[in-house]
Amino acid sequence: MTQRTRIRRNTALVGAFAVLLGLAVPVTATASAPPGRDTLAWTACESAAADPRQQCATVRVPMDYADPDGPHIDIAVSRIPSEKPAARRGTLLLIPGGPGGSSLDDPSKKGQKLPQEVRDAYDLVGFAPRGLAPSTAVDCGLEHGDLATSRLRPWPAPDGSVDENLDTARRMADACARNGGELIRHLSTANEARDIDRVRAALGERRLSAWGVSYGTYVGAVYSQLFPHRTDRIVLDSNDDPDPARVSRAWLAGHEQGVEDTFPHFAAWASAPGNPDRVARRAADVRPLFLRLAARLDREPIPWPGANPEELNGNVLRQTMLDSLYSPGRYPALARLMRAAQQGTVPPAPAAPPEPVLQNVAAVGAGTLCNDVAWPRTGAAYEKDVAASRAKYPLTAGMPRNAMLCAAWPYPPREAPVRITDRGPSNILLVQNERDVATPLAGALKLRQALGRRAVMVTVDSTGHDAYLANGNACGDRTVSRFLATGERPDTDTYCR
Image (tube, rainbow, N blue to C red; front, side):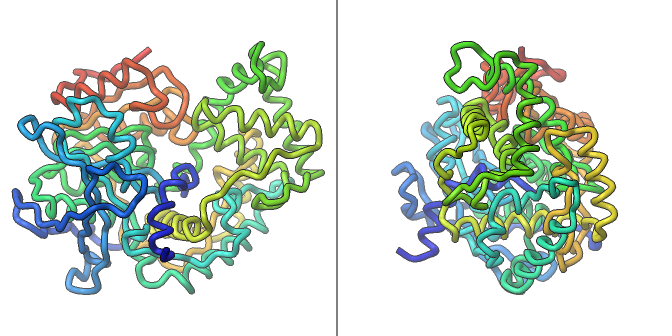
């Protein structure tokens, strides 16, 4: 089996890993095929995870849209056709999170959770964004230790220092400049949106419907801004703050409030009588217990053979907390790690995706986050922000305002971030859980405000990241399904209790 095939078959394993991270007039992609004619050569998919009905194809797009006659790259796409051609409305594009996530197998997976009337109305289409295998791929060749999530999304030292983080940022950014090739300079949200429009044109569609999740909500919003006349029904699920001055820096900072919104729900679960993973007798005791354990592990890490890094320290515990709050189904992992730490032991090391997959995902994440917006270059800026964050939000210990590798990124942004506005058709439905660690409600409300009359927002009384057909509730699911199937949308913003 070739490395390319291994990456293709394992990219789906890293969805949770790919969470996170103005100079030119935006270039609008022109259609590559006349509307109404599908020009793609569909074949059977190589992925073992694909439904037998799923087909795969490749779309060629410019690497640099400012030089459309220059080098081109491949974008891998997939499709399960409408299950009732007589009812077919068009194409529903499944936009993945990340950056670094793929939706190539989503027509076979999450797409099959859609109600029948939605699967009848649309061809379900997924894709691997530029840079992510099996599309033309990038790789930074990072050191193994730098692939740890607590390095890619770095935590300050126990005393709050960011000096080591800045050293790490320089080392990682140098590796990306040395090994990433020309393509890594052209990874950006705006270029992903342009690629999507090339996919639309290749599919022969005049307009495109979409369901974007997490970072995919920002991609969907940017697509709707650059190509408003090409959009049909747009669902944005678990929404990013679109702040054009900070972009990904705002998403990272949002984890402060996301943890504060979500941790009480974990504390209630972790103190419930009868819970085999119970860590405290009262919900009020869980937070101080976690903070004490993290502080103790800062001073006295526990060896953890097979893990990356090979010790359970305070920041690894904090990272596990952040990962576990994405979904109530992950709460036991955090509770069991806390119980083990109390006893001075560790559980078996968590399984990791194959290193080539991690390298590819890390490079796509880095390139996109760092190319979208300029990050501060000096340690003083991060030290001030980290100190303020640590004082106000002790659970996240300053990480959300820390210096990641973008602080040393060698390439300036090639264009200004796309500003999301209320100009365009009113065809967007936002769905948002009230308690979401990764894309908190506070940031989603900023996207809602930016879109103005173009959007309606459904706030769901639920906990976890990904609302529709995942961690939301029946009311929210019904509202989104109705919109996709019929176009019916609430007249005003709605709360689903």
